[in-house]
Image 1 (cartoon, rainbow, N blue to C red):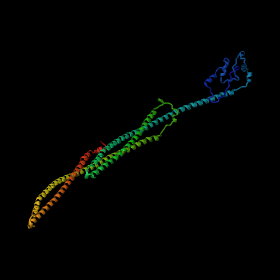
Image 2 (image 1 turned 30 degrees about the vertical axis):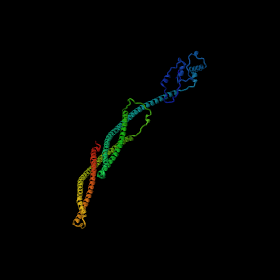
Image 3 (image 1 turned 180 degrees about the vertical axis):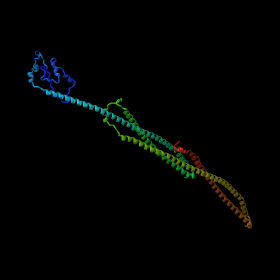
Image 4 (image 1 turned 120 degrees about the vertical axis):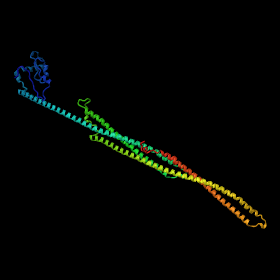
Length: 489
């Protein structure tokens, strides 16, 4: 039922969506009073009022506006107050429409509230589920970080243990290498002694310059020492290369350990981060960045390979140390055995030369004595020859005097025969004495030559004895001891 004189008419527009309720500010504006006492401009701000049929007019006709447009509005306003004219107008909505509109509004409101409530419940459930999922995921991530820290700690301990073993092995190999270098340096002295012995023995003279056992053993000693030096140098080169390999393996282990220390520090800091920790921030797109260089399998295999490489290098280094120890003992024994062999040969040779020298000196003394006797003999022969000259002169003088006998007195009588026989006998004696004198003089010359030869030979033996005994044997007293040859001192 409408009251005559009321101008409150409304039009309804169906909302395009289920959320048709206007904003609070818009709803509040719909409750404004539309009494004639308000200005005409207020009706223009009402969103649900139409300007076609409704416009607020003045209740006093005398003050109505005089413009043509205002006259049209005034005519429309006047029709409201006359029922006969209003019924003639085309009605926009019926009461059923108004009722249905209200029912639709109720249903839409209830549907919107149900949707909002369902959305709220689902949202709360989603927030709770996502909160639990986020918490579980964070816990799993923290647990994974903890497991990762345990893995890093395990491999760090393995690396530290292997590094300690490698450092110990490097120190041991360095010490053995130092011993090998000292042993190699100690061989220079014996080699020089052997070479000097050969050089000094080249000063032997004449017949003593022989290729005897001493010289053979000295040459063999030089060869043995040089062979030992060659083997020691080759082993020293191996030790140097092995030390380089050991240090390279140690460097890889230390670099891996340093990387794991840094990774452990970072993962530990990440493991300790919480939602309320300081220093957390947004890093947009960081999840799309993958700077990874390895996978868990390749990561553990990398460290395992480094450890296996270090262990193999340590095994090779230990084997090389054993080889060096055996080499030092072997070379020391070889050089000492040859040194003793040479010394025995020198001793035998010196003894032999000394015996020969003594024998030569004894023969020289006898020769000198014989020369003296021969000289006396020569003097005796000369005196005997000289003593036969006067008897020969007497006999020859007698014969010559008897040749002066006259005539028949010149008889070949017995005295004549006896004188001739005497002259011949004395001449024969002188001839034989002269022959014996010549033999004595020749023997003396031979004795003198023998004496000179013996004296020269004695000097040769004395020189050889001096070289072997004084020069060579005195130098060979400085041969290094066995501990020095193996590098302990």
